[in-house]
Image 1 (cartoon, rainbow, N blue to C red):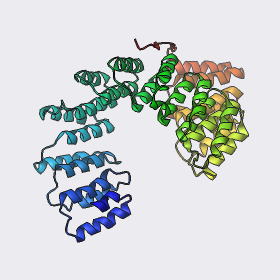
Image 2 (spheres, rainbow, N blue to C red; image 1 turned 90 degrees about the horizontal axis):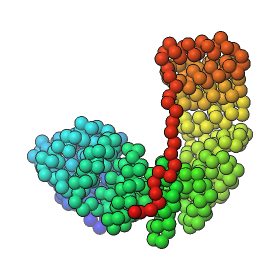
Image 3 (cartoon, helix red, strand yellow; image 1 turned 120 degrees about the vertical axis):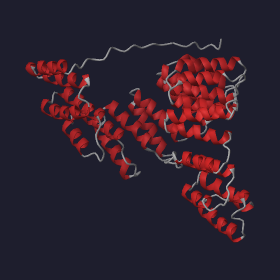
Image 4 (cartoon, one colour; image 1 turned 90 degrees about the vertical axis):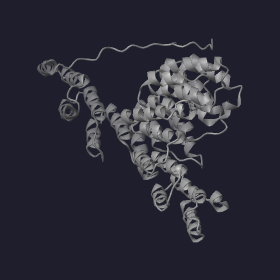
Length: 451
């Protein structure tokens, strides 16, 4: 047991397991349970090894079955958790609140409403619905199903919700796009005298970011500046993101500047915030400063921010250089989003043919968004021939998207090809493609006062 407590790698674990077998403890459920916990649920997990150990146990107890069910929930094959649950039932073992909590979590991950409701029914049948651990997992599951009404109903059934329950329901509201409800719940939570923690603040600030509730976000910042939570990196990262998305870039940068410790998310958030607001030079200067940090290396998100900055600034050569740097110096494979940024950079600057060739050279299938960026560039620079080629690709992927008809029609109009303009409009009418309704915007939707 002392060796298992010090174990930190699978190599160590396998050596200790060999000692366990040699010592005749391979059927000792307490000892072998520690081995399976390490293999199934630790950060260094090896679920296949956990399976091999588990299958050699004569009579595993409920704890070991639960550990395997929990372990499969964190793999790429989470449905196997239900296979082990069925086997557990066949052995005559009774599922407990931990069993159902793990299965409810897996149901949410699989987005299986049917499985989730079956698990909910089993929980009610076993009388475990009053257990807070189970209830919180049910609330989270229904949030993942985008069923905020059921999630709220389950939350309201808790007579005295603890912080975990508040965090769960606020998080569900944010996930389901009910941002105002999330802010209202946060305010109500404070009225009940519940002190927020790191998780509460991060998810509530995300709600502020989504609806542009700058004053509410400022008020949260003021509140946490007088507590120990103000020094937590995740909280500061959420503040930077909130300020940037609400357009208060200077306040975002001031928060960034005051941080004593920063991680890769901090730098990425600030670089992207500057880039998205057209502060190209500042974003690239910050990227250079980040490269000087010995303990940090840029990741794919960093380069998205950098390429976005180049796009806003019309910096074609720099964009090409950073795109090459990404794969050659840091061995990061560009995703379709990176290719989309490069197509935008090249297209805006008039290099529409080069942008088209870049799309054709992509190692993955191009999506409608990137083709649409290319088509917009053709419209901007009046390249009719290439615009028609790009439009063919779009027709295969999204034949009824109104903006594609409009873009090509505008290309024809820019060079005076009015017959082609009329043809596109008739084609639109024939396919019954309509322009979407104009959007609405709102500001200052939430007060910055608790009461």
